Amino acid sequence: MTEYRYKRVLLKLSGEALMGDAGYGIDPAVLDSLARQVKQVTAYGVEMAIVVGGGNIFRGLAASAEGMDRAQADYIGMLATVMNALALQDAMEAQGVFTRVMSAIEMRSVAEPYIRRRAIRHLEKGRTVIFAAGTGNPYFTTDTTAALRALEIGAECIMKATKVDGVYDADPKLVPTAKKFDELAYIEVLNLGLKVMDNTAISLAMDNDLPIIVFNMEREGNIDAALRGEPVGTIVQGGAK
Image 1 (cartoon, helix red, strand yellow):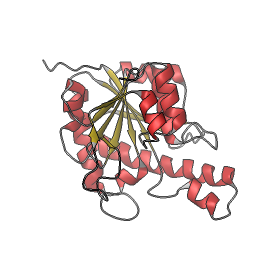
Image 2 (image 1 turned 90 degrees about the vertical axis):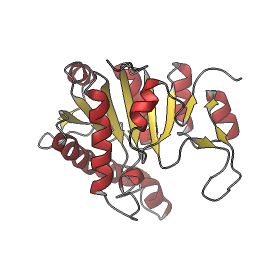
Image 3 (image 1 turned 60 degrees about the horizontal axis):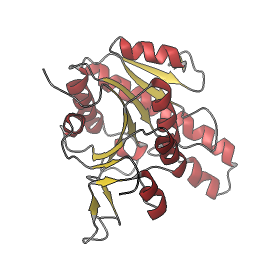
């Protein structure tokens, strides 16, 4: 029997992660890889919830900077996350992973409305729950959504999927000498201005002692390895060292 450190987890996916090497949209190969990795761990009883962004389709903050009303732009971005969630659901179910999409903005034809107790019940029944439409409110990122939903459902950690193998003190693609952190305290992330998640999300995690594992989702097997407690990526937890 496979032993995992965490029983219930929330996986945070950016929209950009879903587009792979393309500059826009959804790469089916990325979805297939992710679905296989989720199946690998849920088959052994891990309860998985997912929050997905929409930046591969529409970025509300960028549109706001170009003159669009910020609230309107954010609502459009929330709808983009629903499209990603439905695509992810299709890939998951093609792998035999039972899923439910729950949206913070009601659209009952394609998704269930978000109800905390119902989401928990789905997880208890072995279904992977994909949270869409952010918090349903403008001015809140999907990072904040991930921290909020993780706490609401009683997740034991957040897994932040990225295209790099952890948190660095500079962009490793631009700075070859960038230093990788194996472990960070929440307050260090805030004080150093590291782009792990937004400050609201980090503060929520810090206030509730919710670990964050930042890892490379492009390497298959990393979700399984991280949940086993292997040194994959960077873990953010605890006080200053």
